[in-house]
Image (cartoon, rainbow, N blue to C red; front, side):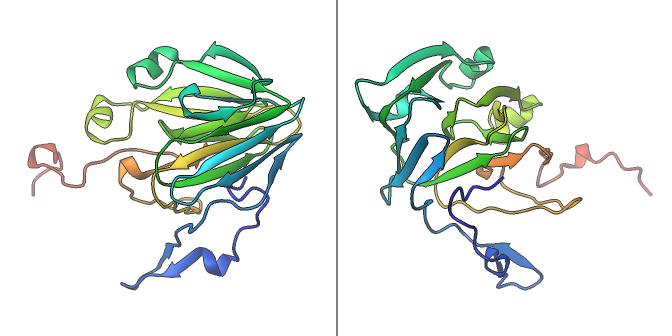
Length: 232
Protein backbone atom coordinates (compact mmCIF):
# COMPACT_ATOMS: atom_id res chain seq x y z
CA UNK A 1 0.00 0.00 0.00
CA UNK A 2 1.28 3.45 -0.82
CA UNK A 3 0.22 7.03 -0.25
CA UNK A 4 1.91 7.93 -3.53
CA UNK A 5 -0.88 6.51 -5.71
CA UNK A 6 0.23 6.80 -9.36
CA UNK A 7 3.32 8.78 -8.42
CA UNK A 8 6.35 6.65 -7.46
CA UNK A 9 7.94 7.31 -4.06
CA UNK A 10 11.36 8.93 -3.87
CA UNK A 11 14.42 6.67 -3.72
CA UNK A 12 15.03 5.10 -0.32
CA UNK A 13 18.06 7.31 0.20
CA UNK A 14 15.78 10.35 -0.10
CA UNK A 15 13.07 9.18 2.35
CA UNK A 16 15.18 10.03 5.39
CA UNK A 17 17.63 12.80 6.18
CA UNK A 18 20.57 12.69 8.63
CA UNK A 19 19.66 14.17 11.99
CA UNK A 20 21.42 17.45 12.72
CA UNK A 21 21.93 16.14 16.25
CA UNK A 22 23.49 12.86 15.10
CA UNK A 23 22.50 9.38 16.12
CA UNK A 24 20.14 8.43 13.32
CA UNK A 25 17.89 9.65 10.56
CA UNK A 26 14.63 11.57 10.56
CA UNK A 27 11.80 11.36 7.99
CA UNK A 28 11.76 13.97 5.27
CA UNK A 29 8.64 16.10 5.07
CA UNK A 30 6.32 15.64 2.10
CA UNK A 31 6.72 18.98 0.32
CA UNK A 32 3.83 18.69 -2.13
CA UNK A 33 0.48 17.05 -2.72
CA UNK A 34 0.17 14.07 -5.09
CA UNK A 35 0.52 15.30 -8.68
CA UNK A 36 -0.99 14.18 -11.95
CA UNK A 37 -4.17 12.21 -12.49
CA UNK A 38 -4.85 9.43 -9.97
CA UNK A 39 -7.01 6.58 -11.28
CA UNK A 40 -8.92 3.79 -9.60
CA UNK A 41 -11.33 1.75 -11.70
CA UNK A 42 -13.29 4.21 -13.86
CA UNK A 43 -12.72 7.02 -11.33
CA UNK A 44 -10.05 9.68 -11.78
CA UNK A 45 -9.07 12.57 -9.52
CA UNK A 46 -6.58 15.40 -9.19
CA UNK A 47 -5.32 17.41 -6.21
CA UNK A 48 -5.48 21.14 -6.86
CA UNK A 49 -4.59 24.26 -4.91
CA UNK A 50 -1.45 24.97 -2.93
CA UNK A 51 -2.27 26.43 0.48
CA UNK A 52 -5.74 24.88 0.87
CA UNK A 53 -5.92 21.67 -1.20
CA UNK A 54 -8.98 20.62 -3.19
CA UNK A 55 -9.76 17.07 -4.34
CA UNK A 56 -11.42 17.21 -7.77
CA UNK A 57 -13.06 13.88 -8.69
CA UNK A 58 -14.48 12.69 -12.01
CA UNK A 59 -16.73 9.69 -11.42
CA UNK A 60 -17.48 7.07 -14.03
CA UNK A 61 -20.62 4.95 -14.13
CA UNK A 62 -19.28 2.04 -12.04
CA UNK A 63 -17.17 2.90 -8.98
CA UNK A 64 -18.77 5.33 -6.52
CA UNK A 65 -17.42 7.08 -3.42
CA UNK A 66 -18.58 7.96 0.10
CA UNK A 67 -17.69 10.96 2.25
CA UNK A 68 -18.89 13.43 4.90
CA UNK A 69 -21.34 15.85 3.30
CA UNK A 70 -20.03 19.09 4.83
CA UNK A 71 -16.72 18.94 2.92
CA UNK A 72 -18.33 19.06 -0.56
CA UNK A 73 -17.33 22.14 -2.61
CA UNK A 74 -19.38 21.52 -5.75
CA UNK A 75 -20.98 18.71 -7.75
CA UNK A 76 -22.72 18.06 -11.04
CA UNK A 77 -26.52 18.08 -10.67
CA UNK A 78 -26.68 14.76 -12.54
CA UNK A 79 -24.80 12.84 -9.84
CA UNK A 80 -26.79 10.29 -7.85
CA UNK A 81 -26.56 11.19 -4.15
CA UNK A 82 -27.68 8.94 -1.29
CA UNK A 83 -27.33 9.13 2.47
CA UNK A 84 -26.98 6.38 5.07
CA UNK A 85 -25.83 6.11 8.66
CA UNK A 86 -22.22 5.37 9.56
CA UNK A 87 -21.26 2.28 11.53
CA UNK A 88 -20.56 3.22 15.14
CA UNK A 89 -22.90 6.20 14.89
CA UNK A 90 -23.17 6.63 18.67
CA UNK A 91 -19.38 6.78 19.11
CA UNK A 92 -19.12 9.20 16.19
CA UNK A 93 -21.83 11.39 17.75
CA UNK A 94 -19.92 11.55 21.05
CA UNK A 95 -16.74 12.45 19.14
CA UNK A 96 -18.47 15.29 17.28
CA UNK A 97 -18.19 13.56 13.89
CA UNK A 98 -21.10 13.41 11.40
CA UNK A 99 -23.24 10.31 11.89
CA UNK A 100 -24.58 10.24 8.32
CA UNK A 101 -22.58 9.07 5.32
CA UNK A 102 -23.10 10.54 1.86
CA UNK A 103 -22.57 8.43 -1.25
CA UNK A 104 -22.11 9.66 -4.82
CA UNK A 105 -22.35 7.71 -8.07
CA UNK A 106 -21.58 9.04 -11.53
CA UNK A 107 -20.99 9.82 -14.17
CA UNK A 108 -20.13 13.37 -13.18
CA UNK A 109 -17.81 15.72 -11.32
CA UNK A 110 -17.60 16.44 -7.59
CA UNK A 111 -14.98 18.24 -5.48
CA UNK A 112 -14.03 18.30 -1.80
CA UNK A 113 -12.07 20.43 0.64
CA UNK A 114 -11.73 20.62 4.41
CA UNK A 115 -11.26 24.40 4.08
CA UNK A 116 -7.94 24.32 5.90
CA UNK A 117 -4.26 24.45 5.05
CA UNK A 118 -2.45 21.15 4.83
CA UNK A 119 -1.66 18.26 2.53
CA UNK A 120 -3.65 15.45 0.96
CA UNK A 121 -2.65 11.84 1.54
CA UNK A 122 -3.89 9.42 -1.13
CA UNK A 123 -3.75 5.80 0.02
CA UNK A 124 -4.13 2.97 -2.47
CA UNK A 125 -5.38 0.08 -0.35
CA UNK A 126 -4.85 -3.44 -1.67
CA UNK A 127 -7.59 -6.09 -1.37
CA UNK A 128 -7.81 -7.34 2.22
CA UNK A 129 -5.67 -4.53 3.66
CA UNK A 130 -6.84 -2.27 6.49
CA UNK A 131 -5.69 1.19 7.54
CA UNK A 132 -6.43 3.06 10.76
CA UNK A 133 -7.14 6.80 10.59
CA UNK A 134 -7.41 9.47 13.26
CA UNK A 135 -10.81 11.17 13.51
CA UNK A 136 -11.51 14.40 11.57
CA UNK A 137 -8.96 13.54 8.84
CA UNK A 138 -11.12 11.59 6.37
CA UNK A 139 -12.06 13.03 2.97
CA UNK A 140 -13.40 10.18 0.84
CA UNK A 141 -13.12 6.48 0.04
CA UNK A 142 -14.20 4.37 -2.90
CA UNK A 143 -17.20 2.11 -2.37
CA UNK A 144 -15.11 -1.06 -2.54
CA UNK A 145 -13.54 0.05 0.77
CA UNK A 146 -15.63 -0.76 3.85
CA UNK A 147 -15.74 1.44 6.94
CA UNK A 148 -15.44 0.41 10.58
CA UNK A 149 -14.90 2.20 13.86
CA UNK A 150 -13.05 1.48 17.07
CA UNK A 151 -12.79 3.47 20.28
CA UNK A 152 -9.41 4.40 21.71
CA UNK A 153 -9.34 2.72 25.14
CA UNK A 154 -8.94 4.61 28.39
CA UNK A 155 -10.76 7.73 29.60
CA UNK A 156 -7.47 9.51 30.32
CA UNK A 157 -6.34 8.91 26.73
CA UNK A 158 -9.51 10.51 25.39
CA UNK A 159 -9.57 13.45 27.82
CA UNK A 160 -5.89 14.35 28.12
CA UNK A 161 -3.85 12.75 25.33
CA UNK A 162 -5.55 14.36 22.28
CA UNK A 163 -5.81 10.98 20.57
CA UNK A 164 -9.54 11.49 20.08
CA UNK A 165 -12.36 9.12 20.87
CA UNK A 166 -12.79 7.37 17.52
CA UNK A 167 -10.37 5.60 15.20
CA UNK A 168 -11.72 5.11 11.67
CA UNK A 169 -10.78 1.83 9.99
CA UNK A 170 -10.94 1.22 6.24
CA UNK A 171 -10.67 -2.23 4.64
CA UNK A 172 -10.54 -2.91 0.91
CA UNK A 173 -12.99 -5.62 -0.18
CA UNK A 174 -13.15 -7.42 -3.48
CA UNK A 175 -10.59 -8.21 -6.15
CA UNK A 176 -9.44 -4.66 -6.94
CA UNK A 177 -7.61 -1.97 -4.97
CA UNK A 178 -9.46 0.98 -3.46
CA UNK A 179 -8.69 4.57 -2.55
CA UNK A 180 -8.81 6.39 0.80
CA UNK A 181 -8.03 10.12 0.86
CA UNK A 182 -7.08 12.00 4.02
CA UNK A 183 -6.29 15.60 4.94
CA UNK A 184 -3.23 16.31 7.07
CA UNK A 185 -3.42 19.66 8.86
CA UNK A 186 0.10 20.83 8.01
CA UNK A 187 3.06 19.03 6.46
CA UNK A 188 2.85 15.24 6.47
CA UNK A 189 5.74 12.94 7.41
CA UNK A 190 5.71 9.20 6.73
CA UNK A 191 7.79 6.81 8.85
CA UNK A 192 8.16 3.10 8.04
CA UNK A 193 8.65 1.09 11.24
CA UNK A 194 10.64 -2.12 11.13
CA UNK A 195 9.46 -5.19 13.11
CA UNK A 196 9.89 -4.48 16.81
CA UNK A 197 10.75 -0.80 16.24
CA UNK A 198 8.94 1.82 18.35
CA UNK A 199 8.50 5.55 17.92
CA UNK A 200 7.31 8.21 20.39
CA UNK A 201 5.02 10.82 18.83
CA UNK A 202 2.73 13.56 20.10
CA UNK A 203 -0.68 11.83 20.22
CA UNK A 204 -2.51 14.54 18.31
CA UNK A 205 0.01 14.40 15.46
CA UNK A 206 -0.55 10.90 14.10
CA UNK A 207 -2.61 10.73 10.91
CA UNK A 208 -2.86 7.11 9.77
CA UNK A 209 -1.20 3.75 10.22
CA UNK A 210 -1.32 0.21 8.94
CA UNK A 211 -3.46 -2.19 10.96
CA UNK A 212 -0.27 -4.03 11.99
CA UNK A 213 0.96 -0.99 13.96
CA UNK A 214 -0.09 -1.06 17.62
CA UNK A 215 -0.42 2.11 19.70
CA UNK A 216 -0.43 2.91 23.39
CA UNK A 217 -0.41 6.17 25.34
CA UNK A 218 2.04 6.84 28.14
CA UNK A 219 2.94 9.90 30.18
CA UNK A 220 6.14 11.78 29.48
CA UNK A 221 6.70 12.51 33.17
CA UNK A 222 6.03 9.75 35.67
CA UNK A 223 4.56 11.01 38.92
CA UNK A 224 6.05 9.67 42.19
CA UNK A 225 2.80 8.00 43.20
CA UNK A 226 2.67 6.07 39.92
CA UNK A 227 6.09 4.47 40.43
CA UNK A 228 5.37 1.08 41.98
CA UNK A 229 8.88 -0.34 41.77
CA UNK A 230 10.07 -1.78 45.09
CA UNK A 231 12.41 0.50 47.03
CA UNK A 232 15.97 -0.58 47.71
